[in-house]
Amino acid sequence: MNQQPWVVSPTLFVVQMAGHAMRDAGIANGDLLIVDRSKAPAPGDVVVAVLDGELAVKRLVAAGAHLVLHAENPAYPDYIPDDCAPPPIWGVVVSVIHALRDGEYPSPPASSSPPSPSPRWEATA
Image (cartoon, rainbow, N blue to C red; front, side, top):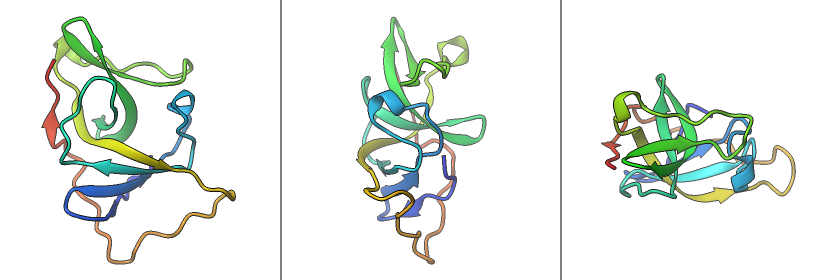
């Protein structure tokens, strides 16, 4: 995932998908994701999480008493937090923008400053 989110408002950001982990959810490599950091994540949401210091896009899934970050592509593993700890959710994806022509996305605004990759909340089971 592109590590330089565009700041749209204090809680809305645009990030660019990198990779194919969410292809079966209709999210393709290069798609632009609108992420809302003010929304509380719920099972079934597509979320941006902080995994090993990087942003990753996964679906939040309830698995028994804990939450799992599920890739929507069988070639990618799910992320199961150690000791059933809640996954570090950075924001909830609320919309996806697909380019109609390959590679024709606008450039981020020059004044955009990336937010901290630290999670805003910890999801609870």
